[in-house]
Structures are given as structure tokens and as C-alpha cells.
Amino acid sequence: MAANGRRRYWGIVVPLMPAEMIAASAKQMEDAGIHGVYAIQVYGPPWIPLAAAATSTGRVQLLTGIAQAFARSPFETAMAAIDLDRISNGRFILGLGSTVRSWSEGVFGMPGYGRPVEHLRETVEVIRHIVANAHTGALGEYHGKYHHFDWSEFYGSVPPLRTEIPIWLAPVRGPMIELAGEIADGYCSHPIWSQRWATTVAQDHLRKGLQRAGRQRADFHQCIWQWCTPNRDPRESIEDARACVAFYAGVQQYQSYYAAHGFEKEALQLQEGTRRGDYMSVAHLVPDEMASTFVVTGTPDEVRRKVEPLWEVADSMALIPPALSLPPEKSMAYFETLAEVFYAEGAPAPA
Image 1 (cartoon, rainbow, N blue to C red):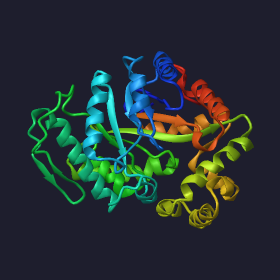
Image 2: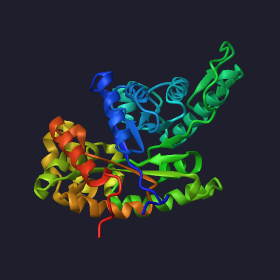
Image 3: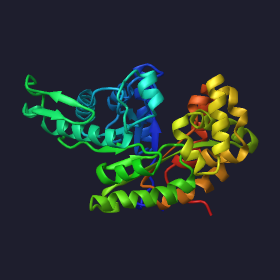
């Protein structure tokens, strides 16, 4: 049973296809009973595929999973959210994450990363202010630690469909989970969360954040994401998980997270190897136990059994193959297996 009494799944739309193919894919998922579709931001912004998906669907929720909060002005993010909410007739959810400093400042060239928790708090505050008030022409000025705006010559925009658009955060560790519980409408967990982290550590921090704001668990949506490689060959399942783990463990900013799981030595080795080459070249350094801690590996039946306990805390789930580290044909094969195992309506819970 899901935490909210109903099992809801999310599918993904990607900007690697023409618009008509994105639209057809989203419609197919809607017809199959998917609760919502999301678009990730690796490089380009996630608004584009979601706009295409909105044109062919009428029920599914549309989520940026995630939009990198510090890669653009909060004003631009707010306006994009207003547009997508209007285009989709009020089905949009703004998913925001801080990403890591090396990407925000290095890859995107955006200075001022600062302290990500307080920076994201301020960014959410600005976005909500703009969504609620931009159409009135009375935005005034805003002066925070990270953002300064002078809207004295801004004369107002078209009224939004909703003046309150849901915002979900994308946390990894405790302080960001607590921030989500305090200020957000929900979270989409980072897919590198282990099952232990999702069901115990995250829940402790979520309760702290909710209590800080005087909120109830029912006020908050937990969307649990998990990398999954359901494969009839268990060895191949683990092999296909290694590079995904190496990609994240090779980032210094995630070191404490891996250390909390007992894999600090391996994370340091992967960081060093990534500096000298790339994450694919050091994937073989990821031991079996580490691969299976951060990716749900095994046969389809084993993957299903491993995922089942997550429904004790999840309101919805996104179960996804590690597409960034696998060839497209293998990713599609895993997508098909996940659909067969999980997404069929009425599928019974495992014994």
C-alpha cells in the first residue's frame, strides 16, 4: 500500500526526439495510467519537452525533475513556471534543486553558489513572490543575500492561471530534506538515495522540517525516485549499475553521503579516477555491494521485492534505468521491463 493509499508512478520525457515523438510518448504514458511525467535538466532547460508533452495530454501532472535553481535567474524560472502551468491547464509542478557547485559555477558559469540550503530558500521565496504578484505590477524591489531585483520599470504580466504553483525540492542529505519539509509542497528524492536512506534517515529529517513549520505529513508529497536495472541476468544488472554509481560518487560534494553508507574509501578512489579520466573509465572500481546499494539491481522479481518497502513512505514513485550511463537501446529495454513489472494497472503486490 502507498503512503497515500494509491500507487502512482511517474514516467520521463526527454528532449532527444522531435516534438511529435515526445507528445506521442507522453500520450501513451497517460493512456497507460501513469500519474505524471517529468523532464530532467542535465544541460538544457526542462521546460521544452514538458511543453511538448502538455499538448497531447489532459490528465497527467508535469514536473521539472529537476530544474537547476541556480543556473538562471529566479525571475526567468518563475515566468517559465507560469507559462507551463497555463499551457497545461494547471498541471505543472516546479521541481527545483541546487545541483553541485562544480556544475553550477563551472559548467554553467554562474557565480555565487554560496550555501546551497539558504540560497535555495531565498530562490523559492523570490519565485513564489513573482508568481503571486507579477500580474499586479506591484513587485517592488527585493534585496536578499543572493538576489537583488528592481522591478520599478516592470509593468506587470498576463495573470497566471494559478497564483500558487506547487514547488518540490530535490534533496540528497539531511539539511536539504529539512528545508523541503519546511518550505516546499513536496520533494522528488535524488535517485541515488538508498532504500535505507529513503525509509529511515530521510523520514527523520522530513519530520524535523515539517515540525519547524508547524505542518503535517499530509501537507507534503514524497515522490521517491530510484535507479533500477531489472534484468533476468543478475550479473548484468549489477554491471549496468556501476557507471551510474561512479558518476555521482566521483563528485566531491557527495562524499559525505557515500561515507554515511560506509563507502567513503570507494568514493575517494572514484573522485581521483574521475579527475584523471571520466566516470566510465572508473566504473569497474564500484564494488558489487556499492552498486546494489544505490541502484536497485537484480531480476525483475527481485527488483520488485526491493522496491516494495518504499511504498510505506512514498506517495508516488519514479523508477528509472540509469539512462545517462547506458546505451539508448539498453535504457529502452529497461524502461519496457519496468513498465511490465510496475506500471500495469492492478498489478498485485509481491508476496
